[in-house]
Structure formats: structure tokens, C-alpha cells
Amino acid sequence: FDNESTTQMFIKSFSHLGRIAKSRGATLVLSLGAYQPTFITHGSNVNEDTHKFFKRRKSKEKLYKNLAATQEAVVHFSGVGNQFCGKEKCTRWIPGTSEPALLLKKNGKIDSWHVSSQGEAFLAPYLC
Image 1 (cartoon, rainbow, N blue to C red):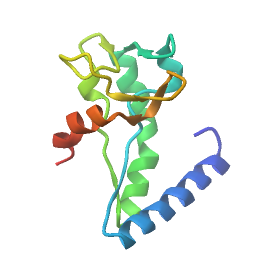
Image 2 (cartoon, one colour):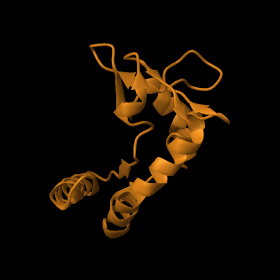
Image 3 (tube, rainbow, N blue to C red):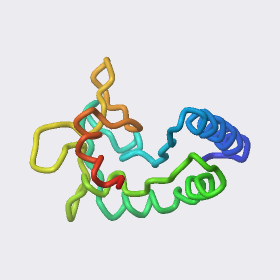
């Protein structure tokens, strides 16, 4: 995150969501999302260099790991995104299909923070 104030707001918000999840017998799963908006081109495509994707994601995971370590009903799932990367590029498509892994907004642009229903079904076995 860009500054300490934003980081603290994030921690407070997700800690609160974790308490709500716990009160309902659920778990809040945090991930960095598959892609950042800066890597989305032409409104609905993702085309990011695989090496850069993993390097960028690793640099931002510490906050998520620390939050999950201190909250009872919060877990950090670092594996989101790996499944959509080949040797050279990462895309928004479920491998071997023409189904999008990322949610499309009403305006046709990708919501880079949320997976589609198809993406949820594809990723579910990786959460176990």
C-alpha cells in the first residue's frame, strides 16, 4: 500500500470482516487477486509477463500473511493467479477453456480483485 494510513485502514477493515466471518462460522480468505488493474489492457484482457507477476505479488504478500497470522477467522491464500500463468504470460482465462477466471463488470471491464463463478469453481480444489 502507498502509505501507513492506507495500510492501517486496510488492517482495521479486514480485521473487522474477520470478526464478522467468525461470528457466522465462516472464514475470510484473503489473496492479492490475480492481477492489478495496470496489467489489464483493452478493457477485458490480461497479458502480463509471468516472471514480473510473481515478483510483484511476492513483494506485497507480507501484509496479508501478517494479518492472517493475527486473526482467528482470516486466512491468506497466496496461490491465486498461479493457475492462470503459462511459461511466458499470465491471462484471465481458465486454462484450456474460453471461460474468464476474473469477473467482468457491467461496463465490460475486468474486476481484477474478484473471480467469476467459473473462476471460483476452478480454484476451489486449490483451497483445500
